[in-house]
Length: 431
Image (cartoon, rainbow, N blue to C red; front, top):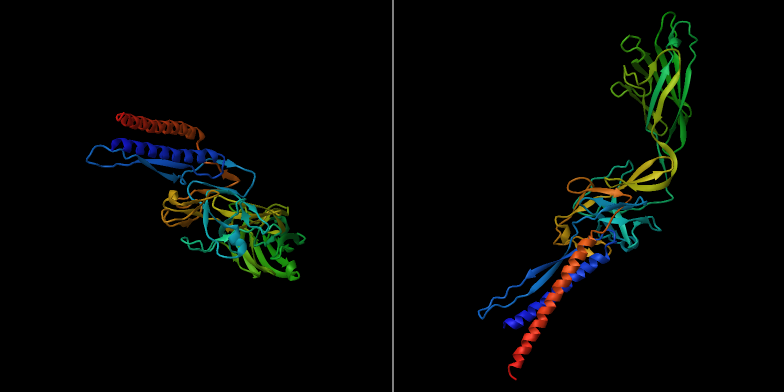
């Protein structure tokens, strides 16, 4: 009968608003929880058809976690506090799985405060370990499959790690005195020493001597460059004849480079390849006609610009992650080594992910299959270090919704009270 259906509708209204109150309470309680995604309650009407008159069907509810919504980002002082600016999620796994040496299931987070544990794994206070692809020795990342987590490894930082960066390139910007290639000049060689670092981080020296060719008359504009390597016992690793231009257009620049011994001169790149004790070493002396390379001007011998890459052995001082998800180990010598790449995980329906405790999510049938993107590529945003994502809860909106829920709950309670009074009147008819 319609009165009893009204009673049932009132009860369903109480239950529905109680459910909404629970989601509001959860949202407000987690308004300061980093990475929290708010919950929503949706109301759905129920229709009951009958031939004897109208029956109130009442209401039922469904709840959803709004995982696709992002909270505001705040800056922190920890380089391994990580947040995602835009879509995509960070892959993590359980510390217990890492410590047991077993399979490492993949979970997802939108933000996390990671610190090295006793074994160096970047771990949150809730026991979630950051996952990434390890790099090769040269800092590049192999081509891993993007639809599986099999290539991901727990990110491990060795705080006692030492690392050296061998020198592979040297740039020689030197001015040779033009007056010393003129007739009557003494012909004394000019000496230059350049430090470099070998494969073990040891300091070695390239000794470079420049000997002018003194003609009987006029100017030769020619020098003999001899390079010896301390790591090779002082052996000659390259000898070259340098000729300089004396024309008005290109006066003082290299006109030709002839190899006597050692690697050939690459006129396109302006480099020579030396073979030192630790392997190949590229020396840039400038292209032909280049005023910024090696020159012969005036009467002064001046090393104008000598630069090199590489560094001695250094201690690990910090770890940082860039916007593309690359994890960099930084040493006290200034050397930076790329050790991992953290991809971002994207799914077709983020709101369909299974929600776990601690702002952690897991791929489900409702979310659809995942794909691992380089941060900043495809639909994903960028990775932000020194940052955390705040709760997505809008406290003002939740309090407004709380008032509405309270009024709706009271109204449904009033319906039940009214139905009770009407049934009492029906009972009084018998008196």
